[in-house]
Length: 414
Image (cartoon, rainbow, N blue to C red; front, side, top):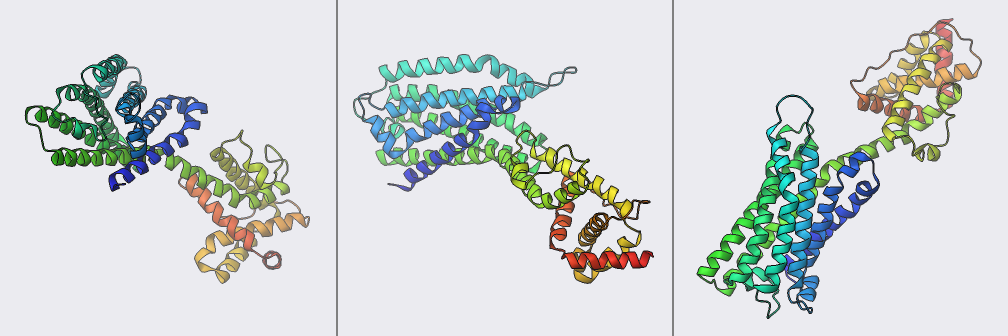
């Protein structure tokens, strides 16, 4: 097995993994995910096409009763995958807010919509006719382009496919280049940039192979040169699919990473949130449950749950201010500064909350609101990150240390 064959298996496996990963969201997700079903169809179609190019599958199909069957299946599935991605581009870029002139990329997407399906059907029909009539398939070919170089029938057949593939690659490159320029998020810009680069490779791939085939009709190359050219362009196409698979997956990876961060935030916030909600049982929408139960409430999105917990914690802290003296803030700051100056802010908040809960549990009467320094975050992520640090400090504070801080504040306020 050559290095190129091994790379073929790896890229086919990568595209298959992406297709399987995105399948649940595409088939059973919400309306936004269903709109991306066409993109999943592209992954699935190219995954099948890439497997037909691998050594074992390629040789097995080409030596079947239908000679060179791997070539026909590869072009069928590639054509369907290209139609799927063109449909995706139309769905994403073919709409804009009503009013005002129609943007250029939208006009372009609508032109694609009008011709894509008809062009795909025409390509499939023409490929089938040419494959069974003008292509010389008397001997199975392992490297179709290299071994059929100089034959006008195979050249005509491949030209039809490359025209379709090249035109689709150019359309994708154009739309994704515009989208890359307009992208505001870094991960989205990188992903679109990788997909754009892949499509430019696709345009170069189809142009070079088409020129090679027609030049070979006029002047047949040596077997070694034809094989070298075929392998070089095949390697370029594998690079294309690697960039496409990774680039198309980056936005989804980013969403998955955010979900993981929200999941970790829930794990870290739960002990603090649950103790506060137990102290004020009338505050939460539902009684606080165990961490496992909270994490399996699939009726509430993770970001909404974290938002709610952050608001619950803030409201509970506001209520606790009525059970402690102003001097608790100073006592909490002094205790935190004496233990870990680098984390004095979050540790001081943790001391204050834990001591205030202890005061309420001991039956302290409600009074006027005590002093407390509220941290103002610029966004949800900043607020949650701060609360996570407070919750981590809260878990580590010993009970006796909490009592000492509370006594110190009560003595100072007396």
